[in-house]
Image (cartoon, rainbow, N blue to C red; front, side):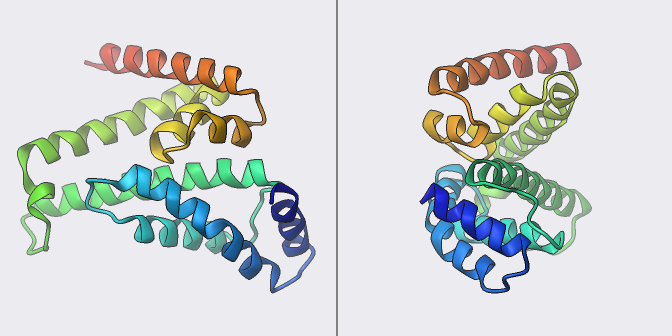
Length: 182
C-alpha cells in the first residue's frame, strides 16, 4: 500500500484529477482509525476530524507530500491544527456566552481545564518545533494524531526505536517547557 500511496501522490502532482479520489479511498480507513483513537471521549467525532483534515489538505491547492510517510506526517500536523482550532472555538463560545449547543462534557469544569491544557500543549509544541523540529513532529504524531510507535516511525522515516526515543524526549521537553511557563 505504501508504494500505491506514493504513486497516487505523484499522479496527483502531475495533474491526474482522479488520483486524489483514489488516494482518499485508500487512506481514509487509516486516517479514520487514527482519528478514532484521538477523539474518543472528546466533543469532535472521528469522521469530522478526518473530513476537516481532508478539507485542509486539499484547500491549500496541492498536496505537498511526495510519499506515504510525508503524507501521514502532514496529516498529523493538520489534525493537530483542527483539534486545537475546535478547542479554541468551543472555549471562545463558552466564554462569550453565545447561545451555542455544547455537550455537557464540553461545559464541565474538567473539560474546560482539559481544553486549556490542550491549548497550552499546542503553544509549547510550537516552541519545541523552533528548538527541534523532529521532536515536535514525533510528539504531534503520537499525541495529536494518535499514531502508534510504528506509525510514528513510518511517518518520520525512522526506526521504531528512534521513534520511541523521540517520543520520550519530546514528552520530557514539553513537560519542562510547560513547567517553565508557569
